[in-house]
Length: 305
Image (cartoon, rainbow, N blue to C red; front, side, top):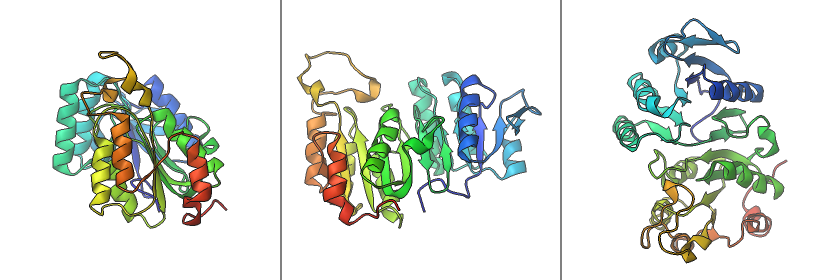
C-alpha cells in the first residue's frame, strides 16, 4: 500500500498544453504513470503526447472517471483551476504553482477543507509511490528510480529538492519508500506534516517516517503534539535544517516566505526540541539519517530486497 496515490488513481493534468506541463507529462508517462486526460480551456480536441485535451474538467471527469488532478498553471489561474476540480468532485489535488496571490491561496484552501478535499501544495514538486510507479508532479524529474525505490518508509519534506535527497538517503541505507511527498514551501499549504503522519499511521506497509523540515511555521510543533497525544506511534526520524538562521542579525532576509521566523515561532531549535520530547529521533547532521536506519530503525523496518 501507500498513501493518497495508487493504481486506482485516475489523473488529469490541468494546464497540460503549457511548456512546463509538457515536460512533467513526458517524465510521468516514461515512469509508467497513466494520465487519462488534460484540460486547457480553448484547446479541447487536441492531444498532448497521446493524451486527450478537454476544455473543462467536467468533460474529463465525465469521460474518464477522473479522481485526481495535477495543476500546472500560472499563479493567476490557480484559484479557478482548483475550484473547478473541487466542483467536479475531485478529492485529491496537487498544486505545483508557486507565487499564488495570498488571498487566492486562502480561498482555495478554505474551500478545499470545507469540501473534504486533500490539497498537496501549493508550490510543491508533488509525490511519488514507487511500488505502483505512480507520481504526480515534477518529483524525481526524468529519472525517479535514482532516488525512489519501493520499501516501507514514508517521506515528508518541506523542500522539493530534499524530498528526493531524503529518499536517496533511505535508499543508501538499504531501505525504500512507500510514498514520498513534498508538502510545499509556502506558509499556506493544504496538507501538513501532522496530516500526513495520520495517514502513514494507518498505512500497514509504512513502518517508519522521515521528515525534512525548514525554519518557519509551527508544522513540526503541531506534529509533536499529535505524537504526544498518541496519533502517531511508528518510528519518526526528523531533520530540521537552518539552525544557522537563529544567529543571523535581526531583520536578515533569507529563503522564502514559508521559512519566516517571528519571535520563537519557526525556530529550528525549538522544532527539534518539541519533536525530540515527543519521541522522534532528531538527527543533528543530515547524513546521520543513514546511521539511524542501520543501527536503530533497521531492526523494525524491512530492508529493500
